[in-house]
Length: 581
Image (cartoon, rainbow, N blue to C red; front, side, top):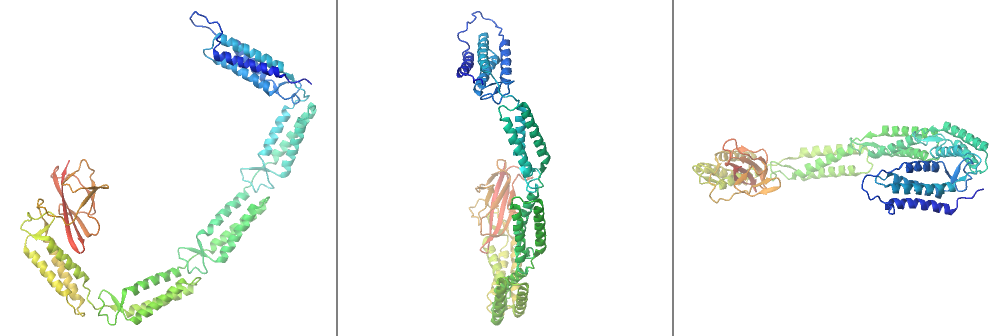
C-alpha cells in the first residue's frame, strides 16, 4: 500500500498559492517597469490555459483518507491537498480577471499555479479499491432519502391526503436492503461483481418500496375537524328542564341530551388519540359523532319565554303599583293620577310578591310560570278595576303657564317703534298688550288659589287655555329692539364654535379666513331652545353655514337670535355679525 502524501508536499502547495496571491496584491514590486509610456499588450492565454488544465486535474481526482474507497482506475488525494490546490486555482483566476494586471503579474500567477500543480500531481495516489462503487453509493443515497420522506402507517388513515406512507414491513425491507448495500460499499476488497450485485438488489428494493407508497386517506384529520366543530355546537345552547326559563330567541336542551353529546365527543377523541388506529375505526368514530351531533341539534328547541313573560308582567305591575296612590275617597289625589283603597293595594302587593317568588324559583317548570302569570294578571285586573282617577284638580300646567307669562311681562318693554329698545330685548307697541296679559295672569292665578278640593278640573283646564291664548297673542305682538349701542346685557350668552374653537363675541365674522361651517351653543340647563336668523328664519339645528347674503354682499349684517327657558323663565339673546371678506 502506498503512503499518503507527505506533509511537506501540502506545505509547498500552500506556499505556492500564497506566493501567487502576494504577488498579485503587491503588483509585482520587483518587476522591471518599462520607463517608456504607451499601451502594453498583456498575454493571459497561458494563464487561462493553465487554469483550465488545473481545474480538470482537480475535478478528476477523488478525495480519500487512504484510497480504500477509490477504484484502482482513479487517483486520489487528501482533502487538505485538494483544498490547497483549489486555493491556488482561485488566486490564478483572480489574476486573470484583473483588468489592469501587468504582464509580470500574469507571469507570476502562472508560475505559482504551475508550482501548485506540480505539488498536487506529486501528491496523487492510485485508489486501492478493486470495484467501482459510485453507482452503488448513489443508490444508497436515493434509498435513504425515500425512507426519510415516507411515513409508516397501518393503512394511511392517520395521514393527510398530501402525505405518503408505506407499511412497517415495506420500510423494514428497504432498511435491510440499504444496510446490505452499505456493507458491500464498505468492503475494501469487494469485487466489481459483488458491488454490481448489491446495486441491483438495492435498486430492486427501491422499486418495490416505491410501488408500495400510497397517499394518506385523511380519515384522522376529518375526525379531528368534526370533533372541533362538535365542541363548538353547544356553545349557544342552554340547559333547561322544559325551556320555560329560556327566551323564545334562545335554544335549549335537557341535561341528559348535553351529557350524551359530550360523551360522544370524548369517545371520538379517544379514537383520534389512539396510536395505530385503522381506517375503519376512524370511519366508525366519525359516523357516530355525526349521528350524535344530529341528535343533539334536533333536540335543541326554542325557549317558551314563560319566565321572561312573567318578569315583564311583574315589572308592569310594579309600575302600576308605584303610580297608584292610596286614598279613602280620592279627594286628595290629582285628577291626573290614580288611587285605590289600602286593602286593594295590599292585595296587589301580595300578588306581585308571589309572582316574584315563582320567577326566582330555580328549575321552575312551564306550568309554574303560567300559573303565576295568570294569577298576577288576575290581580292586576282586580286592582285596576278598584282604582280611580283622583278628584283634586291638577294645576301644575296652569302654574307653568303663569310663570311663562310673568317672564314675558318682565322681559318685554313698551315702545312705539323699538328704536330705543336693546337688540337683546323684546318690545310691544302698546301697553294694552301687557295689560291684557297681566289680566289673564290674574284670572289664572285666581283659579290656582282656589283651595276647595272639589274644584272641577275643567275650571283649571279652561283657565290654562285662556292664559295660553293670551301668551300667544302677546308673543305675536312682540319684537326685538333695534338699539345695539345701549349697554344692555343679554339674558343668554351665545357661544359660536368653529370646529372645537370657541369664538369670542366679536361683532365681525370674516367668512373668507374662516371656514363657513359653525355651531352655536348657550350651555346647559336650558329648555325649549329656538334659534332664528334675522329675527325671522327659524333654524332646524344648531349647525350654521355663514356666508355673504345674496343681497347686501360684503359688510352685510346678520342677526343670530335664541329663545330658551330656564327655571320656567323665557329668556332671549342676540348676536349681530358683520359679514366681510
